[in-house]
Length: 111
Image (cartoon, rainbow, N blue to C red):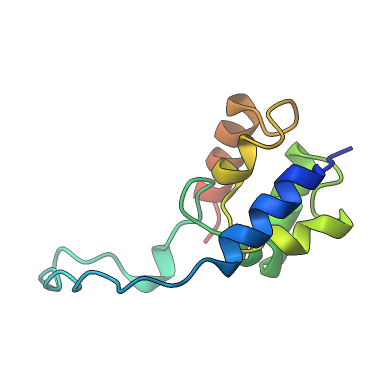
């Protein structure tokens, strides 16, 4: 079962409480022919926050399949702003590179 340690929970909270810095100016939009349609946007373990994955039933099921207990853990709410890759440092036995790769492969197949 996935367990988020106290240190991980504290780190998650401090990460979420960090002040927001000014974002860099957005790059010029790509030409319409080069831009991917919005419907093909992909989730990834490195760039999609856990909250977004939890809010999508199909993505949540994929995460639960590969990391049993993570999506139902009481402490997962504290990590909603983090990615699975971010959480890996706090739970390396459960959030392995192999599991992240398997999750990414299934997330890529979602529409």
